[in-house]
Structure formats: structure tokens, C-alpha cells
Length: 249
Image (spheres, rainbow, N blue to C red):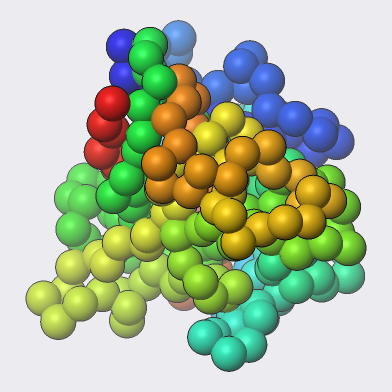
């Protein structure tokens, strides 16, 4: 049976365990998600700044679950400039050096039979209408394609976007109709995101297959860095992440 799971990358852990699945549907009580805070859980992020910590929390952000790796946007980057990230308040590093395991969120698709996945897309929205941007908060998103734990090597060639820059989600980045624009994610990344294409030849990058978009697997993993910048004071609860894909045998 096909399923999309939202997995938490816990601070201090070098892998994502099945027990770290977020209960985003509330099957076992409160719905779980990610919350972005100041220097500790419950502390506000100043307007115009990005978060210092990331936790698993409930819909209102009032419970403190596991503390996750925190990925704070340091510089946006663009088509010609590599963006930067501060991981757990350390010195900024280039986005193409960000290892998968240091991202707070692991998106996981599973299926009984091995399949390829394509048209993989992510968006940030207001939790009630997937076409409407979240209000009062700007979110920065980057997909890490870096299965090696080393920060001295770059990322894989096979990825959804060629730019090593943050994607901004806000009202100002919506289309002319005011609707959210999707972020393209990597097709067929494979288990733990270790599938690349035949343009990569340095095994230090941590890949295990070079099949590109033709790669079929019973599991595909994406690793997502997230950073939130409030535009106004107050808790932002109408705020959610949406992920979709197509799968083919």
C-alpha cells in the first residue's frame, strides 16, 4: 500500500528511525508537526528574524516533543550564488554541503512494490486551502541531496532543482492569482536519498545507485531544511506543508 510519511530528524541522531514518524493525522491523540521557536521551546522568534530551535509539537505549538536539528536560513542564494544555512546555531555553511541527516524533516514514500516516483512537489500553505499562502510568516525551504555525513563534499547531481538556494514561500512569491507556487523535488531519490545519476563518479558523495529518474524502489526519501521568519507578532497556527507525487511501476 502506498503511503507518504513525515519523519522527524532528531537532534544528535545520524539516521531517521521508523519510530520518529510524526502523527500528523492525530491517530494517537494530538496532531503532530514541526514548531519553530527562539532559543528554547515556547520562546517567540522576533519579527524579521528566523528561528533558533525546532521541535516536534502539537497544532497550537504548546507541547514540547523531541528537539530536532535546526536549519536557519543564513543567506538565500540564487541561480548563481550558493545559499547558506546555520545548523543548530553553528557557523553558516553552504547549502550544497548540508548533509541529509542534519535536516529536521525526512519525507518518506513507501509502497509494497518497487516503483519510480515523479512530479514530486512541495508547498507551504495556510492549512485550510492548499492554494493559499500561509499568512504572517515567510518560510524558506531547501531539499538536501547529500547522503554523505561529511561537510567537505558537495551534493548529488540528481536533484529536483539545479540551484543551491532556498525556495521562499510567502504571499509575495505567490503567482498572479495569489496562489502558492510548488517547489520541485527530486524524482526517484531512492532509500535514504542515495540514488543519483551517471554524472556523479566520486563515491565519497555517498550514493549507491546511478539510475536517475529510472530508479525503482519500495522506499524513497527526501530531506528538507526549513526556516521560518515571522512577519508579524503572534503564533502562526494556520500553517502547513503539503507534499505530492506520482508513482509508476
